[in-house]
Amino acid sequence: MIAKPLLKAAASWIAIAAFAAACATTPTQQAATAPAATPEAAQAFVDNAERELMARSEYEGRVAWVYSTNINYDTEWLLQRADAEGTQTRVRIASEAARYQGLNLSPETQRKLNMLRLGLTLPAPQREGAADELSQITTRLASIYSTGRIDYQGRQVTLDELETLMGTERNPARLQEMWTEWHDVATPMHDDYARMVEIANEGARDLGYENVAQMWLSKYDMPADDMEQEVERLWGQMQPFYEQLHCFVRNRLSANYGEAVQSRTGPIRADLLGNMWAQDWTALMPIVRPRGSAQTYDTTQLLTRAGYTPVTMTEAAERFYTSLGMEELPDTFWERSLLTRPRDRDVVCHASAWNVDNVEDLRVKQCIQINAEHFQTIHHELGHNFYQRAYNQQPFLFRDGAHDGFHEAIGDFIALNITPEYLVEIGLLRRNQVPSAAADTNLLLEQALGKISFLPFALAMDQWRWQVFDGRITPDQYNTAWWDLRERYQGIRPPVERSAAGFDPGAKYHIANNVPYLRYFLSYVLQFQFYEAACQQAGWEGPLHRCTVYGNREVGERFNRMLEMGSSQPWPDALEAFTGTRQMDGGSMVRYFQPLMTYMEEQNRGQDCGWD
Ligand code: ASP
Ligand code: SER
Ligand code: ZN
Image 1 (cartoon, rainbow, N blue to C red):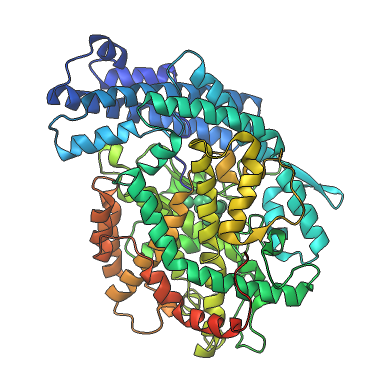
Image 2 (cartoon, rainbow, N blue to C red):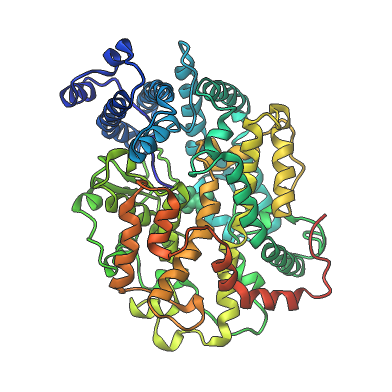
């Protein structure tokens, strides 16, 4: 995740002083004089807004950082307050921006105006007290999630430990216990969430949108309806793969646990998939690995045996980026990042990457554990940091991803380059341990368990929220609609009947913390496009999944052309700068996994696939 100022402003005298020094007119004066809507006035408005937001942003980032790395009564107070004031500021700017629609403006100014209109994830209405109520709710939801613990086997266990246990525990009763207890942590969020939706929708209508869902879908350089169609098209490309994977995995789970635990037909029990949210099934590899197939290696074991630490894992990830020609991370990254869970205080352990001053105060916050998943995640987070620094020469409003899916795809694209050959190159694997071509099915299966299984999860996440925000799902239907969608897209079911009054969606970070999720779906498609393009540029001719562009400066240079654009141009321009195409397309992912698809279709022959 990229840390966006969750927090949007602050009435700190420091920020105000900085702001007053930076501009001639204060926003209040400007609003009071309300100039006629001319192109010149629009330009002045955009310039002022950009300066105001930039001056506030660093303060906001520091408040958010202090909260996220030390959750207590006072930091909650600070966060809540800064967030409320930030919402007010951005709502004021967004509604003023609407005044300048339809003028003949430069593309740059028009683009900035659109961004200012859409600059909120959760808008509030302008009436007294609304922004404050909204931020009290969102802060409460965030803290319930991040401070949540369960009683398990006689001790208090945090989510990061539970996440690892969900991947290693194979006793169905214990899995069910952990799963159920964690999902119950979110039950108290239910009413707050419903009230939050009401307030934010009112705010969206004030800004001229039908609801919050429409705002979220309007951030992709095309009308919201077209974007929804795009998503359907991309999912259509990958859906047959998912159905085969689902069928294959269900069969193996049934063989492993017995029919009574997992039937050979119907949905899969969600707690058996090796992940709290059934979004990444990589941990199932020991169970689903084809019998008698060629040996691969276990990255977690390699890291552990080599004595890796959170810091050396981060350094290894950094080296991939510098090998492409990027500059090393600044010293302050190492001084200020949080790379392990502190023992003595609550923190937001969900991984994120930050650029606190929007220039080069780069940081990662991740409770790193020494395993393969965290090795991937640290590559993911550094992708955000290197992107942030690459576009820091852009005007402030363009210091962002081409769209949010690009931001999430950068580091994952890099992590796709962690091939056996690459592990040899960095000394983690011995050359005689490199799996032969006979192990390709295994290697692809492991990737598919992480990448293909994720797609319908990501869709279910935001289908649920879009329908909540547009009113198709009402608060009394929150939990049942959640499980309907999870069954429809993912073909999974909860291990036990869930209460209709519960709030299982809130047991996932991005729902409790209002981070839109479509970005991850898009990033899983885009990362394979980036990868295939990079490998073509490198002249790679073998099977796609064996390619690594480690050390390739030419690829790095072309990559950087996309990164340094930030969000200054519509995203197809950025995509074209690196890959030569202007469309998001699942074709690269299809080609990458094709040999596995052929294998799974053979294995599944005669099976009753699907789950209806
Ligand atoms: N980048 C991940 C996500 O965006 C962070 C993680 O995997 O923990 O939420
Ligand atoms: N990082 C995102 C998550 O944790 C997507 O993988 O859900
Ligand atoms: Zn991310």
